[in-house]
Image (cartoon, rainbow, N blue to C red; front, side):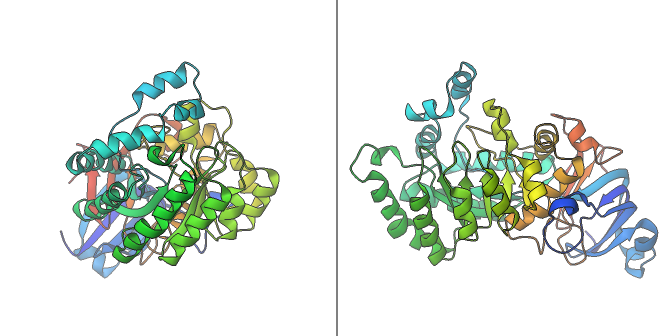
Length: 425
């Protein structure tokens, strides 16, 4: 490939340029350029504007040309919450949920997260890697270019470290950017349950045996905790996240999903990068999030898959000024989807977000949730040339067509990493 690439012919080029995360009214500002073009040099954006402006640049004349043929182009999706590495589906639990069993009831009987833990511990690294690679190809096929990946289905020293090392291997061996998060405090593992001070003993294992190795080997950037009924308390979560910070891991938090615990307030107190889920937040939490720098990441795929009626209060969060983002929560138990376009559809129909708000939440605000905003999430000079191109006439059609993939091409750092058979590569 030539050092320079001219990407031209976008009927709508959504740049999402500007300063700072999008809040309130600015959440719907797309920075749209009609008949837009980009000039890419060494994987980074060198120029962006109308076709007329960019094509007249001297470097553009010598560049390799990629004509989008009037399609819609936007920044590649940043999926800021996934559980990438797992061994198998939990289809058997899906049937139980349909029959009326709750998430908590299934978990109490050894299902849920502990089911996935049992399966992962028994799986080979090769099998886990093969499954994850197939998933990453599907992420790219739906327009995602950056993926956060959590551990949390190992829950012992060897298995948690194995997952984090697989993240590192996968980041090198395929084109999507992988941001690694340690979620050792997902739930208390089976071998510690029913024992005196079982949770305390497991937290000590995290502090003494896992975090030092993760920190010294730089196996993760973030530390996450599932703070909820049946998982970890606010006090326990605070302890784990503060221990993680001592090893250089920035905090993020599963918060207020199944019950209101005060986890969102903890996330704000600790200046966490994000607090995710938020179905059970109250008015006071919403106001506090509106004044904070912690990103409120909403995961409507989870509520949809579980058949829940209560989704996160997106409109109230937006009106309060919170930094709202969206992610798939790709995992085998509660949100087995890799499709950000489907998440946009759910955001529009269930969270009452506009298509523009949903796109911003899935790109630049999601980049802030991963502290990647200086290189991803928008199409601006100096940033990575990460694009998703859709075979559509209007950006609003991305969520409008639910459950259908219209992604025509995905570009990561100026290189085509996915294209349909009709794409000119």
